[in-house]
Image (tube, rainbow, N blue to C red; front, side, top):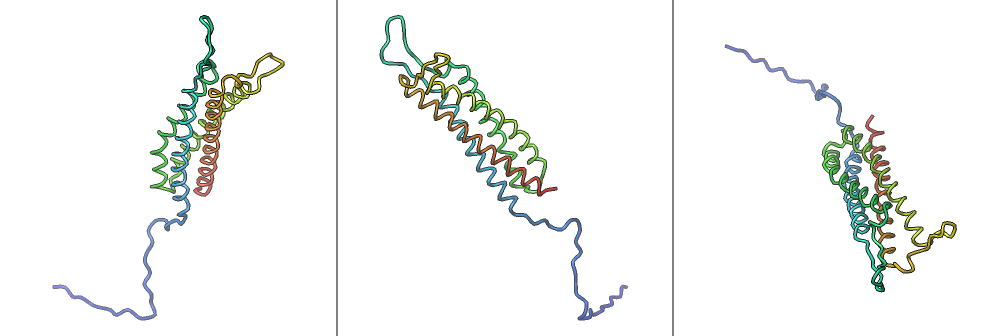
Length: 195
């Protein structure tokens, strides 16, 4: 036997819902930053792979040669260009492997761990991309202009296609560097607002 007592509520009392835990955080802009991060990473992959592939396929042989001499310019003739191809391939590989972490930041835009992980590794690979791009740019400059003090002749008058390919690869590597800079700044801004 149970008894139920119904008590009417007064019209002056308003009902409030109890909030358990933290209030929902605003900041849908972090999800937008995370989506932009993912898109920029795709662009950086394309630029880094383009730089490595363009430099790796740069090869030109002059049409005239003798029985004993053949004039050829190839990326593997220069250790700086070999360093460039290897590092840009490593940068592209890292960017591919960083995509899942970028997706995590889209799904959980307020998570600081994946962003911190990405900003640290982005800084490391920015350094690699900058070093390889700058060293290759120095060799491309010498190929275009030579150096009178060292008696290095400009070879781009004879090897025009080779120089055009290597110059394009260097430009593509610096596009990758600029994208890395944008990624680091965006991640730093998103982390700054997290704490």
